[in-house]
Length: 106
Image 1 (cartoon, rainbow, N blue to C red):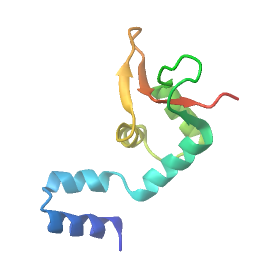
Image 2: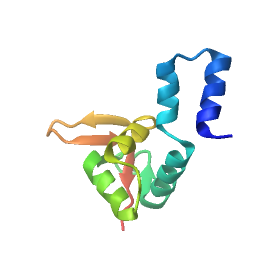
Image 3: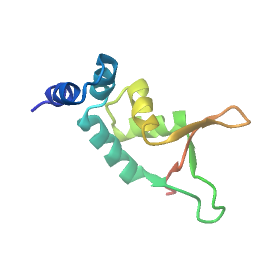
Image 4: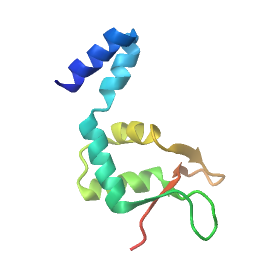
């Protein structure tokens, strides 16, 4: 069964609106699997063990590493997938960062 058929079945059973169906179809399980593999290999999740503050990474910096890794998602699709799991924040310096995730230190 394809993702589209699964989403349509869910829509029918639960009465989702078309906009909800489009949101479900926007991120296939393959996209999320690819993102999970990248995060597992290159990222740390949670808080800094020394400061206790949430780890952060710039949005552009994380996407650049993802591209180097060979990821296939567009920047827009990558951002949407990330926003389902991580909160974005704009620092006082104007940087756009993801909270709760950081790049592994080499």
